[in-house]
Amino acid sequence: MSDRVDNLRPLQDWSHEMKRDWDDRARQDAKWFINPLAFQQTDAEFDDTGASAVKRLLMDDLDLLSPGRDPLSLRVLELGCGIGRMTKSLAAAFGEVYATDVSGEMIRQAQQRLAGQSNVQLFETSGYDFADLPDEYFDLIFSAFVFQHVPSADIISSSLRDAYRTLKTGGAFKFETNSITSFDFEEIEKDTWLGASFPEGEIRRFAEEVDAQIISLNGSGTQYCWTILRKRSPQAERSCASGFPRIEFHGRTDRPESKQVPINGEHSSLTILVSGLVPEAVDCNSVCVDISGLEIWPHYVGPLRNAFAAYAADEVLTRIDLRLPVGAPTGDAEVRLRLSSGETSQPVPVQFVNPEPVIPLIRAIMNGVDLGTDIEARGAKSLLRLHVERLDETADNGNVRVKVGERIVKPSFVGLLPGLGVYRVDAQLPGDIDPGPTQLSLYFGNIESPAVKLVVLAEE
Image 1 (tube, rainbow, N blue to C red):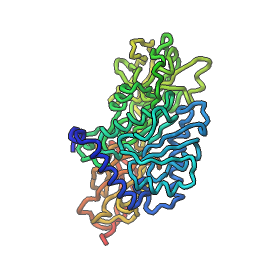
Image 2: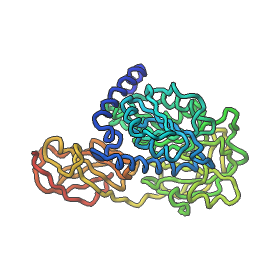
Image 3: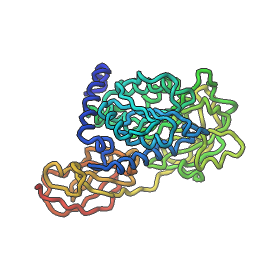
Image 4: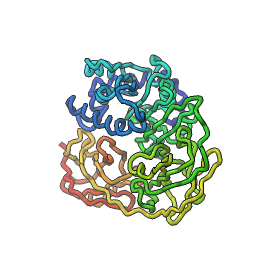
């Protein structure tokens, strides 16, 4: 079903479908559908994964999301709370938590699990708006691993727009969407599990429409694209420049002292520190970086943070990060900043190089049914599920292949598991494979992983 046809369906129809499906999933095994890493999770195991996600995805970014604020003074809205995997940790960290979900059954179970949490309020929503919540009410809005299950881009857009309505001026909104735009993905019919894509272009367009400041937009082109928006005051300064913009420092994002930037791979990101900008006005939509005539929109524009804070001296500098696009040339290049208002900085020289090859590693082999280690030659358990390290955001089923013995198999799914920090690769065993021991390896491009032993069992 194409996105064009999907978008013709009324929002109420999608709402009914999402409610029905997620109510059913909640009754079957809510914990697995929310955190599909293991069946029959205990409450402690389930809540521990939520605590880890809250720390990594929210608490580690608080200096950016709500600088200088005591978390206990903040009112937080969680979109897509399920049965409260993250809500319990949010309640421990923040003053007030309003948690929402499209599924009434999820909310019912969350009420039981969170009984006694006096600073939590739970709401069932339509799935496309937050009609029960007031304007300009929340200091921080957070949504993780929710919109990737929404079957229509119209629903995602409607939800983002109405959630943004409830955000206070100066507040931050961090959310995750699926931004895959490959032909293979677009051809797959979307439902309430494999949701529609809401890619970088749509996020940038949405931010322009609501006049939001895009601070960060990471993971473009992947299943896990994270965006941070800040709500500007209608009276805020709109001029991006306070003077003549000047690049004061530049380096590789993960290694500031290095002036050589790989053109692809996980470290293909350049950071520049710029003076002469207005931090409250400049964002990822208002500046681009010109690399010898190639214009690139940044994925971060904001405070220096982390290792780059040491380079500030006494100046007010803005940090700008950008990833190199596929096909970027190697060699020496001139890099300059260009503002949407027309101002351009003087160029600085940067050297772009080919990356060192990174060899992928297969860390776990399971079947795709119950995630057990028993892999069978026929039947449902002939679907392999691999956990793989050392892939990057460019990995997909176009450049990843699984080698079983001497046979090359195209995977049916390649995607990051953010909770584990590894990539999941699903592939079907060849239909004529014989039971017994064999070798298994994985190709990422033309680089092959070390082979591991696989024992294929006869179907029971």
